[in-house]
Image 1 (cartoon, rainbow, N blue to C red):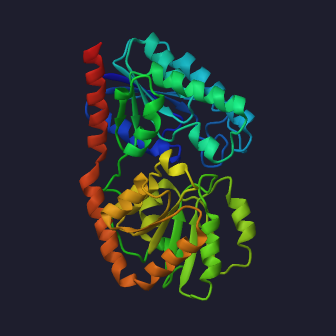
Image 2 (cartoon, rainbow, N blue to C red):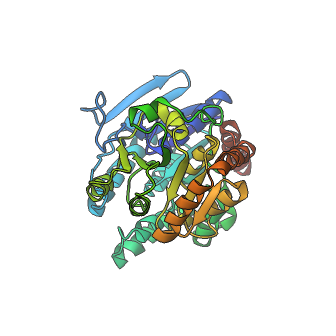
Image 3 (cartoon, rainbow, N blue to C red):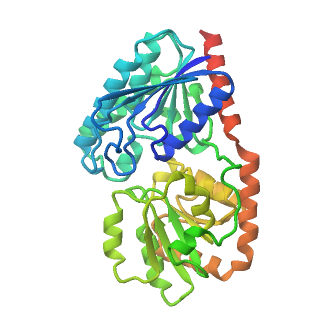
Length: 408
């Protein structure tokens, strides 16, 4: 088949969504499909166009398997400026629709959200190139923006809800990452049978259990420490104040150190609050090539989401942690997908979101049960190995396009 993939990020961009869609694309290529990628110039790391890509609004890259069209995403560093972010999304989406709408007919278009506007971009490209559209929802918008308080104006909320319903209605199929997300959006879809669950994958060959004593630990003075780590975007969705609360409460435990690895809009504020805390270490975002090493360096990982977000977002880091054979504490809504996975895998503890006391007690409990952590990590690894491989996920997308074309 010939497919078009419309995505906000693609390698070498380091956004988690970009890593997922890049791997799915290459698995589709391995299954003999031709791919055209419409994406942005790399910008995620510092929220500005990366060196080597500046000075161009559009960049074309021809490959043995197809073409990559990179469009300026008009990035803004201020995530709280809704007007600027909306303008960036609209500009990127319009340019992508114009550039992707030309060319030969194809067998399918896969468009990713967020941003939600790429649903209409995918629809325009699918109409012009006579193909079915699969709209993939990584995070449910505008739900996430509403829960974070970033979108509160009733008129804007109503407009975003209308755009959401229009995008769902225009798609031939809507894919989500979990049953939670399916239950969330199905009432808003004109035909709920269009909603399919296709989870993100974990590369269990690349991310695998490894020794704790990594070069990363040595670099950051973590040798012989009990490392409690948050690794990921330090943004608005994560309740990382919990980490500092726990660090303050457990400061007397000299062996425990809390590591916040990553960058984002919330990092500067956390660093200010943590000033003088000797058991908190901040580490900049690491190259993607070091992900297995970073994951291996922790005794215990953290997945903290703000209240209400677990029904709209499934952090992909959860599955990478399990693949690395490390236990975790998930501070998420009770009964959500992440909480259920942790429980089913026996891979750690789930506590209510934004509850500092419960979170700190969980860290203390697992520190005191250090002899059980290896078994928890092994349980998580076994769960992931049974769950989804990159090739299997890519095949599910290919099979969905085959099904949709058969209907047409």
